[in-house]
Picture 1 (cartoon, helix red, strand yellow):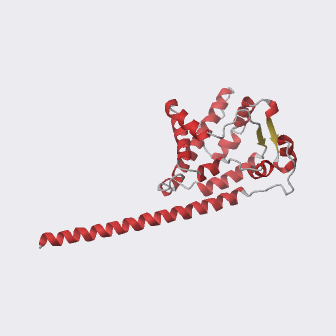
Picture 2 (picture 1 turned 60 degrees about the vertical axis):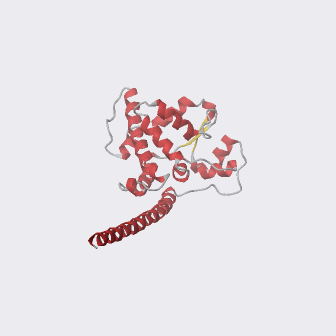
Picture 3 (picture 1 turned 180 degrees about the horizontal axis):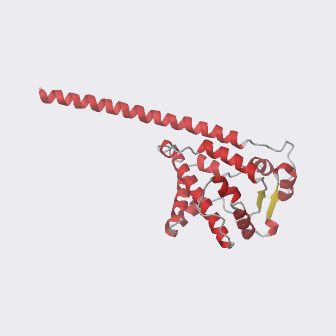
Amino acid sequence: MGLALEKLLGGPVCHSSTQLLGREDTYPRNWFTVYTAQPQNNRTTLLPALREATAGFVAPSAAAVCWRRDPDRWWARVWAVIGKTMPPWLNWFLAPVPGWQWFPGVMAQMSRRFALSSVLSCEADGVVVWVGVSSGREMLVESGHPQVPLRLRQASRPPERLHWVELASGWAPLRAVLNKPVPDVSFPRANDAAAVEATARDIFRKTAMVWAVIVAVTTVLLGGLGRWTGAVGVLVKW
């Protein structure tokens, strides 16, 4: 969707995960602050961080273009991405890198919000489907959670500014919504899992270099400290 919109609109499109991994340290830190302050309803902390994080992106009068996907196929792709990008040791591995250090925390808070919104939506409808999360697939596919963002979009946009498309239909639906000519190129097809894997490899490689520098500097400092304390001991004996 992002690649197609860039072609039609002739400019960069904001993609949330790309922003979290590619922007300055302040941006992911603000989202981490928003997610952690929300459960306590700490508006004094939450609102300034939210304003800064969404500056330049929020457009209440904009059209919402959503695309339909098969839940099972979607989950297969999501799980492939999660499995490759969220190993349990990621928190400490990314800790020394500004910007990236906030990514595991933001993703964990987003998962918590997914679970909470699903439970609350089911209770609001008068039926408690489940309490807690026994698996990611149950939470996002089987529990009815996909209907939550659907209801939110329908409530926040008038019908004339809410559009549903299927990417399998190519350029036609997007062209009609945006009133733009069809580009003289094929409709872009991106392999999400391959793109995420390439990004993950790049992040791991760069972070490993940071850790190598940390280990090297620490080794030199400890070696120098050892020689210095040894020299002091010799002087004391003398």
